[in-house]
Image (cartoon, rainbow, N blue to C red; front, side, top):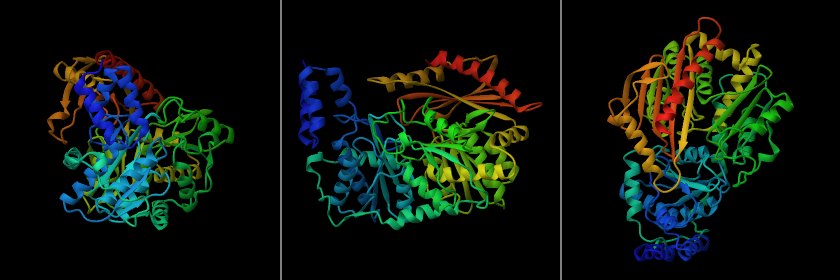
Length: 552
């Protein structure tokens, strides 16, 4: 028997829901008397924050659905009006379940509120939407995407104020406007073909691709052979065009994963960081004798990289790719008025590389909303690179977000240039290790799914905050830095545990129900770099084992 007040909330929701699928889902749960599932959907709501909205598809305010999306669009429109931000809004989408109808609903609500709307007509990379917002001087843009989340998820990402991801206090302001939006069935809706709703001009996409080509700093390096996969996402057409525009030739694409498919049938998770996600592209690369293997995530804003090594293939970490990009880009520029940035959970090697080149370095909180603001805060400097360890890279200031398409172009260029010099990525990484030390990075994570998962996850961090360990591995914990205090960065729920030669950062994910540990171990090289990596990995395994026992 479902509680009467809960039933009333469910039925009130159904009355404003235009989607018969989610109406039927709620009916089925009511008929089954499944109060636990109903409360999970209707007693909570998706939090509008770091990446806008993101969650599982389904009925109720705690799921991604047409009611949530229409009210989000109405709240965004009201916030734009209240804050005096004039101009059009750009709307784009990936190829996930629900993305097309969510994008259409968003455009209709925004146009119904009096906004001119430019809609990207086909599934596209998130970076194109961010670029378009800046190119058109739009005060806001919406990208319907759940990035690399599981197939059953979707999301609603918002850009504003200079075409960057929203950051505090804008996220709270927009969230409040969404809360004040009326029922979804009472919102003014423009017709899908209303004059206020226009297709994004093809010239904008052309300018984006031309801008990527202009990022190249060693255009004369001979081409190399590239194996590529979009992991069933939107990347194939854009990467091919970017390579052609940039003079890099045609990549070889994994046929089974080349076209968008919202079910992601060949991978357990559509995230190139997950074990097994790159198996098909590595197989293709080996078969072709390729020089490089690349993978984008489903909305093509992240990039994974693998290179030949010791007769097999070595998948690089995000930190390895980040420092290689910095090394490449800074080596081809000149002058001290340049800036590179990374996050508090990424490798500290970037700061050493920046110092060696005499350029500015900034460390930020996790996420590109902070990385790009480091550049926006210093417009007198040339922004060379921002990167985060989670395979996100922003080359230059073409896009104020991570961009897996432009990163793929520059990674291919640097591999080609190394090859032309008779070198390789593993050799260059060893040279950097001998100069700056091995910076070995590792991760551990645990998912907290279902009702109450977020609360349990937060309690684990709080317990560590109250009672941190005295030892990790065989080393004394010298200092615990609580980033919630906001002493050197904006406050965030994270702890940094420092031991000699290593640091471990513990934080809840901002986009998934996942608790994460990021570990960096620094070992200086006295002989072979490989020996230092073995020592660093051994210490890392011991530290992660101790933290997993405490948190798991």
